[in-house]
Length: 497
Image (cartoon, rainbow, N blue to C red; front, side, top):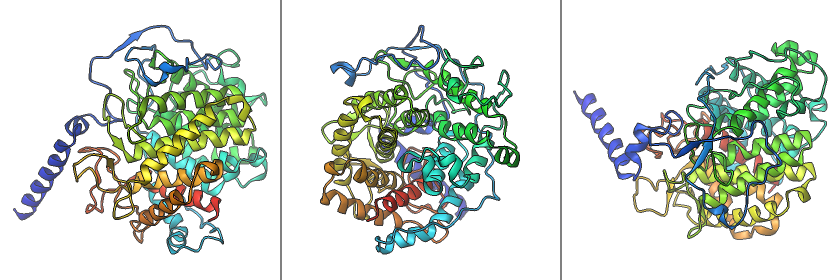
């Protein structure tokens, strides 16, 4: 009886928190990634060019800050399996090397915990965006030459094979429909598969994995699957991991791009985060544009790099709340200032900018890089000015509900990671005060990581009763928070101070 009463009281408390949130009940009934938009769609059926319409201008003029509610779409629901990945429990993650110049005790502590932090993430990541984030994190931490921040064009041949990342990527798309695949390793330029006009094998428009109603989330897996294509050309790797032919994986990436670019878009070309109708989410800042930028980097394509920053600029201009210089979570949805959404946007832009810089194609993207750097500099000011007594960014900022204002390790970690990347990409737009606040936030996150490597005090990633932090619930775990803590460590390590 006592157990029942406690359970009932806890449930009532959670519902109360959700009800207090302006969108709490909506979120409880309609999770961001599990339900299609139930509201009447404002999308209209129309013709959208198939394939990667890279050369098309997105109309970035003064009107770009407003995303029209009308949209065009020819996308049908993906046939891909929603959640087909079972975590590989046998994987182990190596210790990492600290930057010798960083002597802070919090940094030393996190350095020692990185293998456990990543192991915990691997144990619980199953959804498209979680897996995309985990794989990208593993590559940044263990194989930096394959990623934009430490790019080495010869890394596929010269660096250690990223066995864990490739195995997770392979298993993530184990239920992919390969009907019509090339079934060959031809040795031809794999980038030919990325556009309908050049692909040697006709595309079948489909996502790499089911996105639970999200159009953008599966795109986070593009770098991982592209690396499968590159490594499948190596007989040793192909045999050991029992990979398909290289051309098959490149073709699958082309299919994903086809599916993305035929999804709902606004009148000015902004791509939707959702499949059923046009919705603009801050999450897309990490999912879509960095994947396009990565393809631009690996294939030396200025078109992909430009497309990446065009999309980020459109999202940024529509989502930025200019009073506080902080991003909204969902335009016309959860139009609140959510910490993790800001982390998605900030770190996604850092990946975009690093891809452009590493490709040596800064001049090709025009003013996009300059403008987005200036914008994100203001966002960092807006975010770090909100640190609470635990040196964490509040889950939701600039609102009066104390439940929603609890500090969130997840959004804080990704924001700190983005800032340390920004210190190297645009040091002229940073300052000592911001760096001090970032160090405090770093300490705040590390203080919430337990002895088993679990990042506690993180927002409920599934939004069960709203995207809320339950600080006393130590059983609530976030795959994103785990990955973000590792990204934060790696970004500071690369900065070296």
